[in-house]
Amino acid sequence: MAPAAPRRKRRREAPPDPVEVEVRHVQPYEALKAYRCPGCEQEIPAGRGHKVVVPLESPDLRRHWHTGCWWRASR
Image (cartoon, rainbow, N blue to C red; front, side, top):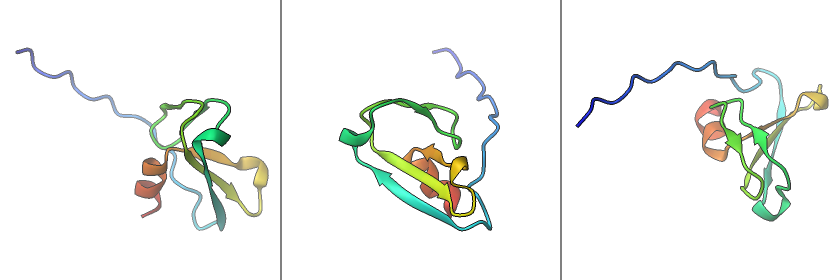
């Protein structure tokens, strides 16, 4: 069996902190297009439930996160 390839380090965006944010859950039937998760830099495909994180003072800086990525980053 061949050895596993080394994992690449990815630049990960931390959740907006200490900025207050609103976190909304997007249901799968509401997810009509794909987004890029800033936590893992992977695609969130259309039709997959996820979180939308909106800074209260800058709503134009909202980001779409995988639910698990947001959970890990916000701990």
